[in-house]
Length: 338
Image (cartoon, rainbow, N blue to C red; front, side):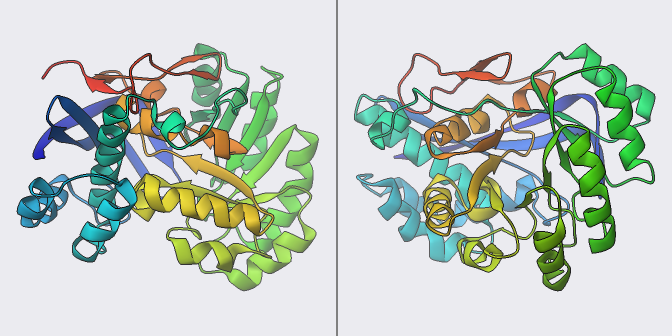
């Protein structure tokens, strides 16, 4: 195999603000593996919160370039295990490499990735569309600019309930809310009853990631289900979340790619929890990789390509929330210019 790197700055259509971050541009790294005529692509974005940079990912991958390029790819799972000891401190880099390996592997088999996994895409969840934190007026405008059946609303302000009340006046769509660790247990419980009356489906990560005592109380007293995000990063976190959250949101970049994500989803299901996968404002490369997990999921947040103005790739598309797979095998993603 041959290893290539492609760097892009993704321009966001609107300033994207959550409880602990705000940005207009999202740097991203697309990793390419070439195996004969097969070209596979994977992606990971930079992330200040987790200390991940594009330069750091490239540097770590280059240290094992010889190992990668001399590997005979027969199984993405075996390849993940091979490189994991070298990339265990940079799961974002391992995610991009793992997505590319899965893409190549499925293409060599002449199948779409979900088909190569033995899955059917006949019944899959629709994706939400995220409304980032802004003034209430601008959040309403963002929503009206993009009619959608399902919205995820970023919260963590002094006006959280007022935001949801105002947005509810303008749509009958289903709402989800994501506090990104911003609330106390008391706020989460109090807000949950008002949010339920406003047509909210669930609350994502209401408390700080390590506030397990508070989450135990919220889990017991909240009027709405709670989904773990920052509290569920790697595989060992899934079991920790049982009895504290009603479900887990798996991020491919945080856990190290599709391979561990599938294991996390299976474990969550076995523990009776709901399963979700979220995105990190990736291009069509990363979003297309997520799409192949849809047959395993209850919920999905894969609106990254809808939030950027200069997607450097093509892949899955959307029809009012419904995911439409590309005709190509593998993940279906490819770069527009290369």
